[in-house]
Image 1: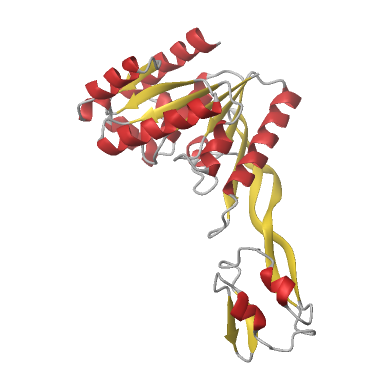
Image 2 (image 1 turned 30 degrees about the horizontal axis):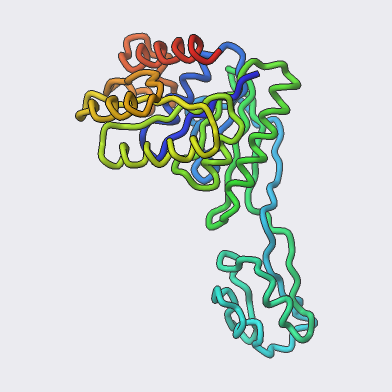
Length: 288
């Protein structure tokens, strides 16, 4: 079983477009959406049903026991995150501002505050026409996205083992933060999608540095290469001895496919689909 993560140093490069197409090109995949802050792979894969759902508890939040609280206000004075307010005659905790640092618990003279498990999101096992999709949703304002990504990946791996699947296609989180590193840890190949812009080039370098430090094998795909000068990107990849899997041209059919909520690979007259098929063949040839 191989794990392939499609990532990008920034959002909006076409990462999910490529991920969804690879889910159709590989014959026996489990699909995993690790962009839990803004999951959208399911929009293109159109799950037929959610088979199972799971709660994700990330970190802890403070909770006041008002039967013990004497309204002394020490907790509010001590909270450096300004997560405690005085409203309607009592102190209340703002769950979105609370960092679970436990200082209010330690300083409350009445022992009226405790930390409780925080429901930070959910993740799901869904059935698609291509097989099993595992995806998750983090609640707004939560900061434990890396942990939820880990849960999504563990569930994907167990499903692949149980069903004897050949490959896991991971739609990774953008950027280089915790959810992005959790998306690529231990994969067999990271496909980095970039674009020929200054910001795209800058964030490609950050992603490559991150993958090198994590010792993850990777290769690059340049999307919409013909909209801007992409020669510098290609020259840089050559100078850094980085595999360039292919270049995807700008294709108005991608906009049509997105509106119709379908992977671009299903459109036979698409020039982007042809380029993605070539990228798929190069992945098979070089890494399988």
